[in-house]
Every structure is written in structure tokens, then in C-alpha cells.
View 1 (cartoon, rainbow, N blue to C red):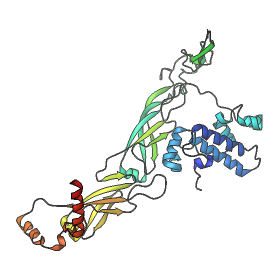
View 2 (tube, rainbow, N blue to C red; view 1 turned 60 degrees about the vertical axis):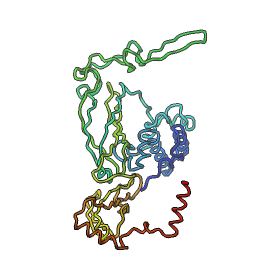
View 3 (cartoon, one colour; view 1 turned 135 degrees about the vertical axis):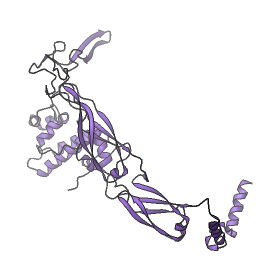
View 4 (tube, rainbow, N blue to C red; view 1 turned 180 degrees about the vertical axis):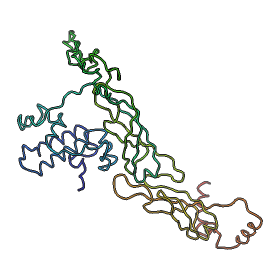
Length: 390
């Protein structure tokens, strides 16, 4: 079954802001909420469909990937998590939408609020994102590929399970901020009272302090390692496109969530072809005799080689088109073409015998270019050009 466009589902255009997307989702969620539509399976499916659209479009990385690759780009790493099997999953996933005091509590009472457990504050410090450049050949870009990447990054320490604490020593509440992770400074002036909130310098905003540090990670809860992972590259990507791999970046400090890995596409220069959007261009030089008499030559294409027919009398500068021999389109079916630009080679060194042959041919009207014959019409044109410069 073909999925509907996420923007169409939420009823917004592609330039919609995050606020507009959130407002559109809240409106649909209220309309198709299970408490408003008890026993209505169709309403529940629309409720889940709207949640899926919101999960992608509310995340800047996922939204950028969707805008570039469509639904095909949402499969595998960095895409939609796989669908909501139960409406309770939706409440727990989007606690900023369905949390206590939300519009659902106002409309449906506390029953809606009881569907979820709420979002808990994540421990530790979130890991940073990583960027990696991935060079691809035109052959790989043309049909898509799967690449295995080697990435040096911080991963969770296996000895302390990411807590940073040695053995079962655990953590204690920070005595400076009393577990809040924040320090509040109150000052008064003639304009009133001001409250300045800053991160606790003792616990770095975590609210807890490790009793005894893990000796393997020095209390960070993470270690530097080299890992391998696979990434699916959809066909038709371009130089500068990027693929975000969710939670594949650096592990956080002491249990903090992982950052993302951003794979930036680089297009390698090709030996034969130049790319023009989804078309590829091949410059083919043929001899003067082949251009005059015609021939058949073997030329490269992205998938191997093919035989190309050169008709008699082919002129230099002519472009021959090989349909569907280019790069697959990124967002829809079909692919580009291969354009073969013909260059006719004119020799600048001839033997005396070859020169004699060309002298004999020079008297033939068939080999004289027509544009060298100045008829009355062309004379009128040249006289107008001359007048324009006088």
C-alpha cells in the first residue's frame, strides 16, 4: 500500500514552520482521538498516521531526509521508527504534546493523561553528533548501494554499563544543587527581583555525583572505540546531500543519549562521464571517415558497454540520446538518459598521398558546406550586419 505524503496528512505545505506542523498535528489528534471515537478503527488508524507524519516532520534531520528522498529515504537508519502499534505508544513518544496539562487533559479529562507514563529527565550529558564524508562513484549513485562505514567514536563503557561508577558504588545526590542540576542566584535592584539560573558546576547539571569512578572510563561512562555500521544509500543522491543516522554518533557521558551520525555524500569524478542532474554526458570523438561513411562503435555506459550506431554524414556537435541509461530519479520512478556528444576529429598532419586524396575531393560539391554558398538571402543578412557596425 502506497503511503500518503506526510505534508498532505497534516494538511500543511512544505514551507510550514515547526509551530504550524505541531498545531496541525494537535488538531488532527483531537479529531481522531480514540476517546472521541470509541470503537472506530478507521479513526484510530488516522490517529496513528498523523503521529507518524509528525514524528518525521517535527525532527529537522528526518524532515530534511524526507524532503530529499521521500518515503524511500525513511527506510533503515535515520527514518521512521517502524510505526505505532498502540495508541499508548503515541502518548509516551510525544509527551510534549500529550503531557500533563495538555489539550487532551482539558478535553478528555485525566483519563487521557493516564495513558502515558511521561518523559523522564535523561541522565548524564548528551553525546555529540559526528560527521563523515562518503565518496561514491556514479555507478553507485545510479542505482543506490549499501556501504559499510568504519567510525571512531565514543561508545558506552561495558565495565560500568555507562554509569561511570566503579562496581556497585553508585551515585549520591549533589550537595551543591540538591539534585536539581541548577544553581539559582537571586539579586535585587530598584527594578525588582532577578533570578539567574546556571548549571551546577559541581555535578555539571546532572544532579548526582559518582562515589567512586570506573577505572576503565575514568568516570565518563564511555570509551573511544572503532565500530562498523552499514548505511543504505538511495539512488540519485547528489554531491552535498546528507543522510542522518539516528543515535549513531558519540555516546553521552554517564548514560546521556547518543548523538547522530551525519553521512555527507561526495561524488567522485568519473573517468568517462559528466553528470547533469540525472543525465550523464559522454564526449565521443570519431574519425572524419567514420563521420562521413557511418560506423558502429562500442561505448561505455554505467552498467557496462553498448554498441552505438553512427549514421553517415554525422556532424560534429551532434548529440545522440540513449534513453534510460542515466541515473535513477531520487523521488520517483524512471531514470535519466545518457547523452553522447559527437566530436569529429580533423587531422592536422597528412601524408602526401592523403593530401592528394583530399585535393581530389575538394572539387566535389557534395563535400562543400552549404553555409559557404552566399545566395541573395544571405547577402542581405551580411549587409545588415555590416551596416550595424558602420
